[in-house]
Figure 1 (cartoon, rainbow, N blue to C red):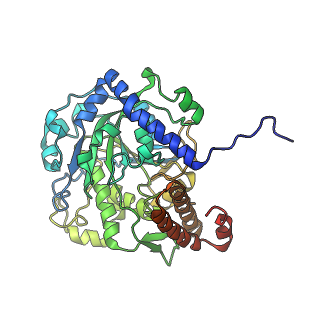
Figure 2: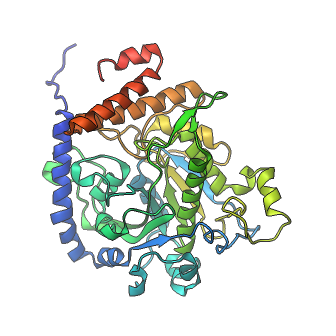
Length: 434
C-alpha cells in the first residue's frame, strides 16, 4: 500500500548543524538576555556561579564521613535526557524559595573546607533542603562545548534549553581535573521539542508558568583515554590505572560539591561514554564504587583504613567517603536505551530501573552526546560492538562537519581503525556509511 503523503527526508547533516548553530547564537544573544530581565532569580544564579577546586590531598580528609545509621540513597536509572529526569524530581519536591546569594561566593578556586564550614553552604541549611542538581558533562576546554557550532551533546542541549551558558565564565577554563563549576538556580525555558517546525514557530520556548529552576554541577571527564578489550569479558577497559583513578576522583569531587551545596537529589549519567570514549562498564563500576563504597571496596581498602574510626590520612583511595548524610536520591539519566542497558548490567545490584512518564529512548540527531551512545545489556560482545558503533557514528558526524583537511584525514584514520574492530558482517553494513 502506497503512502498517503509524500515522504520528507531530513536535510543533510551539515544543514542541520548550521541551523542548530544559528539557533544557538539567537538563544545566547537574544533569548537569554530577554529572559534574564524577567527572571531575576536566574540572573542571581548566574552571578552566584563559582568554580570549586578540591585538593587531591585534602579533598577527602576534610569531608565528613556519613553516620552508619543514615539510609542509603535511592539509586535509579531512567531512559531519558537529563532535564526530563530532573523535572520529575522537582515535581516531586518543588523548588524552595529563592535563597539569598552571597557576593563573596563568586570567587574562583574556593577551598571546600572554607565552604563546608560556612553557614550558607551547610548541608542542612533549610534553603537547600530540597535542592535538585544535575551533572553537566562539560567540555574541559570551552564553555558550552560546541554549542555555538551546532553540536548536539548533553552540554549543548543544556545550553540550548537553559540559562547555564552565561555562568560558564571563560576564566574558569581549562577546568581543573578536580574542579567543577556550581551554578544555582538555572532557568529551564525550552522544551525538548527541537524539531525544525517547533524552532521556526518558537513553540519550544516554555510559557512563563511552565519554566522551572535546577542547580547544575559542570565538570569534565577525560577525553579519549586509552582503552583495550578485557580478555575475560570482551568489554572495553582503561589501559592505565591512573585513568581509572582519575575517573573515581572526579566522581568523588562531584559528590563533594553536592555535599557542600546541600544537594538532596542529583541527576547523573553515563559520564563520558559518548564522544569522549570512556568505557561504559568502567564508568558504571566507578559510580557504584563511589556511591556504594561499603559494598564495593574490597579487602585492600579495608586494610588501608585499619580499625574503624573516621579519618583518613592516606591517599584518595584510602578513605571510603559516603554521601548518605546529604544525598537522598541519585538518578542516572541515559538517553539511549542500549547504553542504559549496558550501564545497568555493569552497575549491578543497588540500581533500580524505572520508566519516566512521557520519556522516550533514542538519540538526538547527530548522536554525539555525552550521555548517548549504544550498548546492550547481558552479552559483553554485543555491548562492546554497540559501544564501537556509537563511537563510529560520532566520528562520522565530526568528519562531515569538519572543514579542515588535516583534521578530517586524522579522523578518517581513527574511524577506519574502529571499523576494523567490528565483526565482518557489521563492518560490511558500515562500509557505505564511511
